[in-house]
Amino acid sequence: MTFQITPQALGILVVGCIVGIAVFRYTVRTHAGLPARGDLVGAISAAVGVIAALGLLLGLDGSGPGSAAVPEAPPISRPAECPTDAPGC
Image (tube, rainbow, N blue to C red):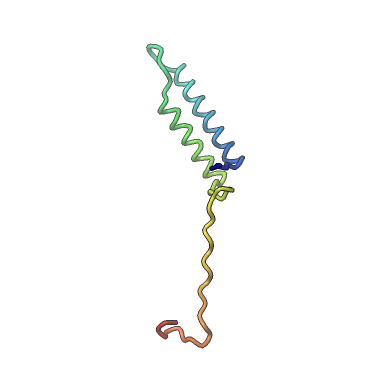
């Protein structure tokens, strides 16, 4: 099965990953005390936050090539000779 992703969504994903990496590396340098690894949870949270914000701002609504479109229901019409208060009309 092939999963298609739009270029806009791919760009948003790449930007989110870059922000996550930058946050991880920044937390390694700013840690006070013994040398330790960066804040992985903070980096993942920052990446997810950026991806969600850009997705909402740039309008990723899932209408890409792989999304299933829901057909629109036809409008309900009443026959001209049927009164509005009659049962079954």
